[in-house]
Image (cartoon, rainbow over all chains, first blue to last red; front, side, top):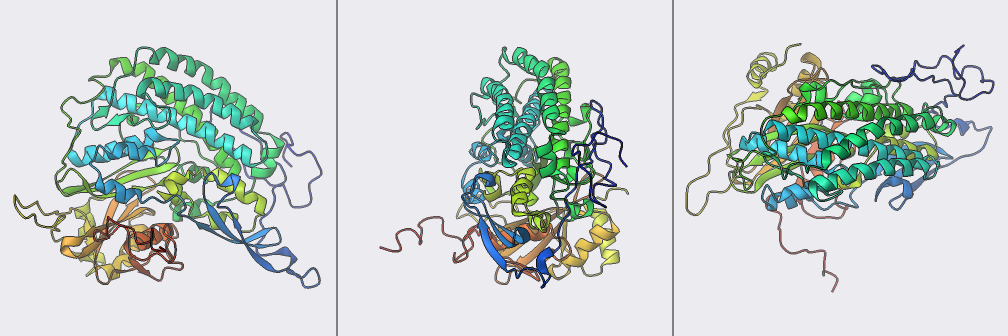
Length: 422
Length: 173
């Protein structure tokens, strides 16, 4: 038997709860490994009430959404249920479709920068970086060192605020109304204040330009950032202490929405969903871009691939982002160059060719594929949106679970409809 | 496993999959202008694969070379040459640069074998390409429109899709 604390102190039915998978995160330093012993609900293949001696059941097709508080936007799931059990689930997209790519092909390269903000409106800085990198690759624009540091600083702050918000929404979906969400939003506000200081806008930052960022950090930015860094560990620890062994969370998250390692790879999921399934794939390490090769940070990895693992991975990623930001604060004063390459033209006319740039956005791999015909407008502009592709395995992840689990599994993938529908 | 450059990939694929690798002919990215200099043709350095053999080529990348992560499928409409180009992007989990396979199909009969039976991750990429460009992926299990509604006519990302006017607004009056 397990010797750890029982999160669920009741006699276990035979065969359940033991042996529980060795939970926890590899490469974790600050906390002891979590003990995962609660009763793991098993997945049902087909329907358990198919026995003719019992009830006569009938499959039923219902819609979850498009107007549903837990779908994080306008998103519909066409669900076939047998009683409470999910037999099949098909996501239905397109309610927010605006043909972003077609609009972008009518605009000049710089005009598209604010449009990328609207893709994943939680992480406008990350979208800006991926797009700016693609155009810089296409047009051969160099970025000064200081600008790279500012960019990475902004994207790592984005990662913290995204995960704080995503965890808040996840807990909200589980029925622990508002408290955690308010905690997450409180921290998010502090980061948004920093964004406002630097870029003038809180959410639609439009801060990046080809060859750098639009303006340098104001003098009052760094003291505020250092204050935030001092307060940050307490917030993350508090969040983790409140939730890690929280009974509601463990019952709703453990063993739910399992995505095995091999399946996660075959489904092309990225970001915390892939790492939660145990694949240590992070583009910041796998194909370092910008100045990520200069920082020391770990890639947290889950073991089972359930909702709980994704939750733990996000908590640990916030800590790792804070580590990166601390190193940026140390190295930024020595960085060469200004906030932007003064020779970089903003009204670019890249030579004929194509370029693909990808970054590890907080939700996964965000890529931009651009084809230039030598004119000021992109000939082809394609977004590889992480939220969209991470929804591919949703049907497989939900099959066999209950209807109430669907909203939790969806919350753990962490989608933004602005990016899914584009 | 050492990472491959596009040239090495072409060499190995020409050896192991005869007939799969095609010559990358230059493409015109824009129609010829009425006056002024002719824009340069687009010569790709990536591997162009025969449309009929994309499944074999992709499985070769996955099973022999270890590029198991299908990251992206993009479609480009080269209207002047009457060609759709599909850009498949593969990566390895160990990291490093990816490999790109390009497939060219004529605009009149845009049919490509589907990767979804072998790579479930290709599902939404291919449905998106079908919805916006009208690329037909044979053997796809559920090839339906994904963003536009089912009754929508036309392929909105094609270069010859009308940019002005809307046949759905004001059609009732």
